[in-house]
Image 1 (cartoon, helix red, strand yellow):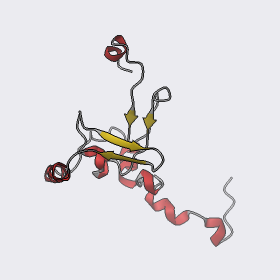
Image 2 (cartoon, rainbow, N blue to C red):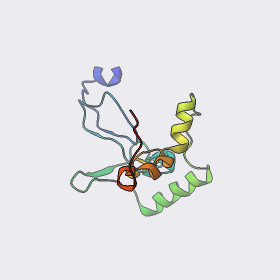
Image 3 (spheres, rainbow, N blue to C red):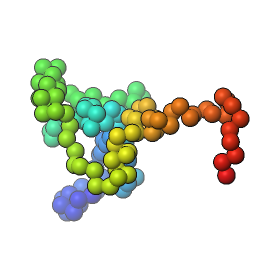
Length: 128
């Protein structure tokens, strides 16, 4: 929690995130939302003050704005070239961003998919 909120007596902060997070175990959290903002998912157009309906039974979170406003924001996002995030700071970050699928698709290295279930296809090599 940010110190400014703690001073105001706020000790729990609800969180919706589209990536891995730590430090949220004490707060109500919805993590791994997909598609991610970086893939122009819904979180990319969410603004401070927007209301969101969360249905834990259905596994959904819906932005409660008019369809016209949603379309306007979506068009503006596309006009800006999509969601912009900071440049990669390490080669591992660049590899992850360029080769890892969305969370809803398993968040695996895209080229690794062809190696899944190898034991069902042939006798795997000894790899230990």
